[in-house]
Length: 75
Image (tube, rainbow, N blue to C red):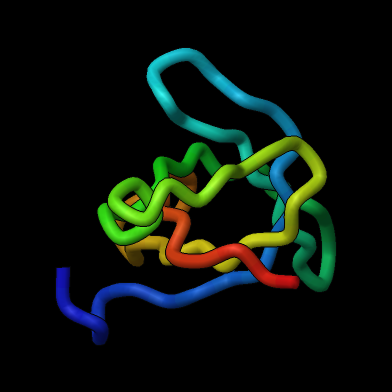
């Protein structure tokens, strides 16, 4: 997936799902959407702990805007 085909959004982790995935709530102008996201490889390698309520940056594909990858945790 190239950078031209994806975009980054800020959101909050709302739920932990089986299989190492998370439900991330992303506010938009009109409503709040929920994205199913998995942690990126860099987060897994560095053992970054993600919990409910953490603010994260999610990379979302233009082809499927309801699935994404958690790129980093925002402090």
